[in-house]
Amino acid sequence: MSEDHDFNQHRAFDNNVNSSLGLYVYALFDPRDRRPFYVGKGGGKHGNDRVLHHFSEARHDRNRGSQSEPARHELSKVRKIQEIWDSGNEVDWKIIRRHLSNEKEALSVEAALIDAFAACGYKLLNAQGGHGGERHGLIEGSRLYEYAAPPIAGRDFPTELINRPLFIFNIGQTVGRMWEGVDRVENPNFKPNYKQATICCWNIGPHWRALSDGVAIGVVGGISRAVFAISDWERCQSDPKLWQIIPADIDENTSAGVLNRDFSSFLHPVKGYLQRGGFVICEVSEAGHRIFRRGAKNRHPDAAPSGYHSA
Image (cartoon, rainbow, N blue to C red; front, side, top):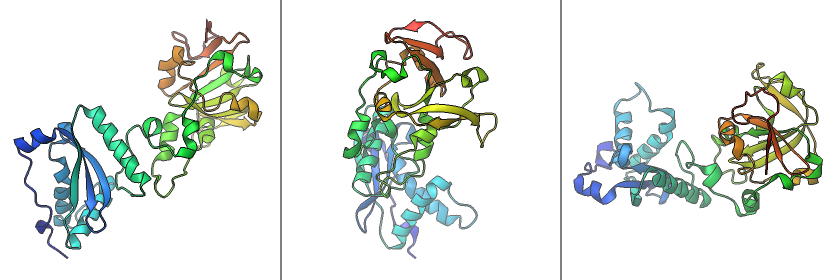
């Protein structure tokens, strides 16, 4: 085993280096096969020599022996660095972009780099995928048209959905949890179960559960990803205080009319309410007007139907 202090001993960044970098994005590489294994941000609130901290962490972990281990999300990266050192090599590191304007731009560059490496088949050890991956991230060519969703208005709804209660659920958080732990390199065709995310679980009162002929629509980032009929409701098994949908099939042509459509403008009157992770209920009239029954501004969630909003 090589002595850790022989490898990746770099001076702390001085003012000249800091000025030449600003806010930056970097990557760590295994010199044995030149493959990247970690991407991160430095500068600003992250510390200007953040890229060097990984080597200090790896040395500190080995020096403290079996007393404790790094945080779980850092462990695989630390072990990788130590493995490279034990092979008699230094970890290679590169600054990919520097003088980035702000944190938002740094997050975007970092996420794009993570996606680009994943598309090339490189498995990174980052604990999380790129920021905003669901809305801005990697898309397989075969799924492009699913993401290029056209906007929907009231007049676009199929006749079969007119004057029926439409339960529109924000399933973004649930879908995000489905992505956790998914290796996009080993599972390039992974697709979240949007229907299951829409089914379960919701805090919904008896007045709304009693509505008949309902239709469930699950949206992520404003885009509809699941559409099915509501047969009934039952207690959620994981939390009896919540309820889940008993789904029923809906005509394929009917669901195709509202599936993978951009509901952002349609839901604008209740945008704030929906963003808080809940759901809204509306109906579409024959004239194409939206009638928001749950979630309209200045209305109690269980209040009577609100007025019309033109679509």
